[in-house]
Length: 141
Image (cartoon, rainbow, N blue to C red; front, top):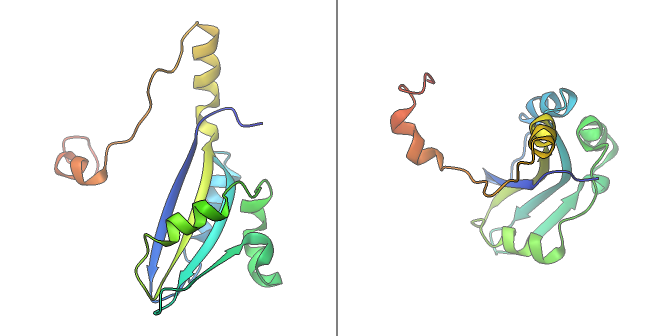
């Protein structure tokens, strides 16, 4: 059961080369119950603009085994229309991975809000470009 809003990210890689270097970080997030990946789809866009999508279940055995700890709860919620829309944002000769996840870290906060009679009114994000000039003031590098 999904208890919180879902988030998504489309991460592009130049030259149709997904190396898998981000997999350990994704595994870490999933294994520490910080996030639960709901759907993960790989998208490639050829020089001529044609696209191809690959779901986790479509990976070869080695690729699938690499993602099993991440994808044990993955379901196919993204539609063909969703995938076409995201693929249209990519330049030719590139690849991307589209993640859909829920933030498990927010569960205790959600429960406390409900118990106290609170109700989420709005939730959003501030673009990194707007925050970057203030990173030192925030104690971040």
